[in-house]
Image (cartoon, rainbow, N blue to C red; front, side, top):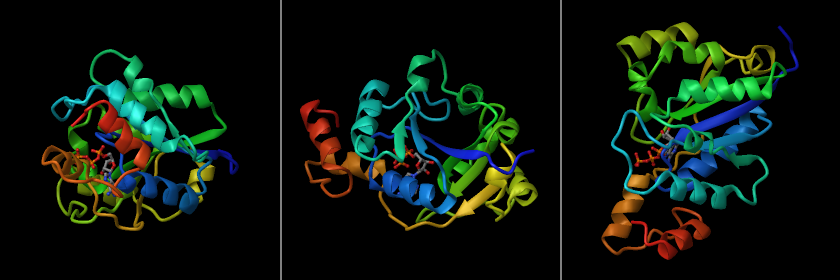
Length: 214
Ligand code: ATP
């Protein structure tokens, strides 16, 4: 065990499209937890929801555009390179191997994603590879009963120093600036011919227009 690990964040999602709810949370979390950087990792083939109409390549391109000028945030396109369902545990194992023993990993997810965690492939093994950071999100609550609630009771802590002492194993719940923005709402606005301006970066909106995405 070392007390000088460098923590790195991984924020998975469909990012269909990426918006300020994701980006602002990502940046605030980097600062709150002292992460070296945070990677937004677009999911190529989501195992738990219908494949988005928008291709993984487009979704990743929009994430790239959104983080291009922010050195604390990066796009990690590894799931686009892998065939088959994009299982988070596979990506974390791969990344952990690449970064090596001097780093700890934090898997970041919103409150809505945590509710279905027990349906994820090898979900109990996530904490063998990474810490988990749950972001509170307007309109969503943590589960009170069930497998995920029990798992939370067992692993939840406020000890942020664990990020520097252990490579994996703790669960944190972080309340950041609440921004009730969702990709669903942005797609609905665009479908109905209304403006989504100021909900997502201008470059991303321009990309959507150029490629007639939604
Ligand atoms: P959709 O509406 O298509 O479901 P979304 O806006 O929820 O999309 P995702 O790409 O599914 O975005 O989310 C990726 C991750 O970001 C998830 O863990 C989700 O909980 C989290 N997230 C999304 N929007 C916000 C937000 N406004 N604030 C905090 N976390 C968010």
